[in-house]
Image (cartoon, rainbow, N blue to C red):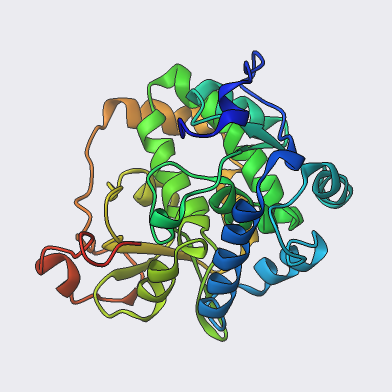
Length: 293
């Protein structure tokens, strides 16, 4: 939580960790930071993001300027898919997060990054959460997938398979790609909201790009401090949703006994390969210190 945000500091979260947005308390500079980030990302995402992302921006009027007011955003989102955005002061406990998703509530951080963090920050802010995640929540199939994920998360907690499910979220919701007739496109919020990774994820020859497979993804480690060395691509949101329409109980039972994790750079004989990456970026030690996301 940013200690210098008085609006957050003065609020006591509810039992579900939600707080009021208090939109009128955002400063002119904070709105300007949003507008700068928005313009930057819209420019870099040209030809790289899935069409559904732009459809969501337009349907929810996220392109009108300034940090969105949930009092205006939520009625539009609820009318489209029954979802709403709720504000939280910081990252919430896993069970709380899953419960929000299972009930079609997306928790978003209230604060916005400072000007010294325009390219990268560790904790998701209101720009990452609303610009990155919310447009696709206006897409019915993806919205259903997110609810199914939340429901699966509550069950994963009981089976000690949270790490497996976290990998699914990471490689789809945050860093997912889609193979389309027009080439590889971005839909993951972690990429969509990152100026540099938006280019790296689809244009750079370094990472592997493989076809999405549920169990494969749930057994594959990931990077939290640098660009990904592997991305998994779906061919449609229907494919992603269908993958969750199974009884996860037997899958969790299997995974609770099989703790094997595939190394990030591995390509398995069963993988469908879109790009066999050079791994040049990783082999050169990465460059986050001078080239942050």
